[in-house]
Length: 193
Image (cartoon, rainbow, N blue to C red; front, side, top):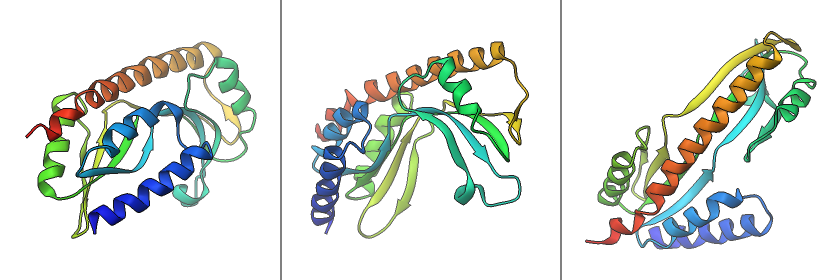
């Protein structure tokens, strides 16, 4: 069952990579995980910086919209240009750290993956679900920014603060990626036993 699921998911991943739907920077990490016997990735993101517009009175999961989203490191001009698209709702400056969801064959495999992550600074990592088919581990850092900067098309912060926020977000995103890379370089330890 697990091996069949892994084969199917990896076929879908390869198609997504071919279509350019996967962050380039995360692909080497996915390959390391997917080459491990008892693991495969189900979703991933190398982290991003963005401007998000969230409605005041509607379900934000459904009705939020990205005004700008970058998996690389945007320039202040990119941020300002995205703010010009704001119309209605809260405007948030967002930095999300890298996130990986890993299917593990069993609870023992999940425990090994989680321990390696936490011991390498990925302290927000956790087990997300347990079923007969697999255990899902989420690999995540503690770095995150979610700060309101305006509402209804009006930005309440000045250029200097936006520049400061962007520089800070880039620094935190780089730090979170370094943690993920360092952890990925130690993945071989999981199959050492």
